[in-house]
Image (cartoon, rainbow, N blue to C red; front, side):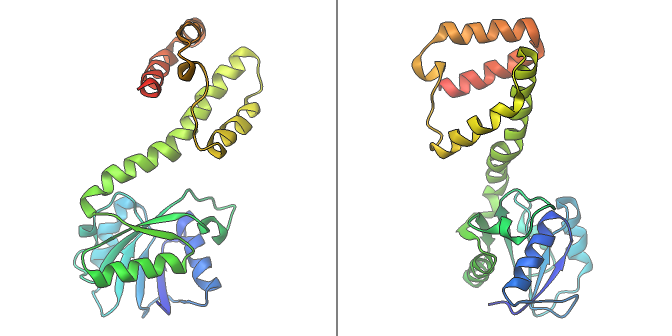
Length: 220
């Protein structure tokens, strides 16, 4: 187990990770640690790694889509992406029960990555370096685009005179029910689907292409 870690970056992920490490009795140091953990924006990883002199310890980043080559010139490296969305309003409990994608080039690096993930309270799985962009695209759809879907649905609710906050229990229950599909497409009720299109076309025509794409993806 890593007994000392240097966390570079104090954003939403970095602050939660540092707090969890301290909870678990790991020394969080400014330098001289066994592991350097980069919690910086993806665009900064290469520059930060390049500015650090390679030493006997390990280095990792928490980016979902950035390749391990961004950690050059360091050899003892791995990637660990907590598959979770983070908020500054919450603490290290945000890590509990989430999964973590670990990318490594050696068996030792894989073991150290899995070790760190479990230390943080995450459930690790191995991910190939070349698969990271595709994996991260899936994560973005599940998390980022959920916000988009909620915003669009809220706009339609407002236009209809319905309270947008009523959507939250519906979305939560959909997840709790294991994403079991219900509604007009599941029933094959294409008249209702067409009525949706007509209503959107009359009220928010800019949203009709999005509705069509989602309907087709749901149908298939």
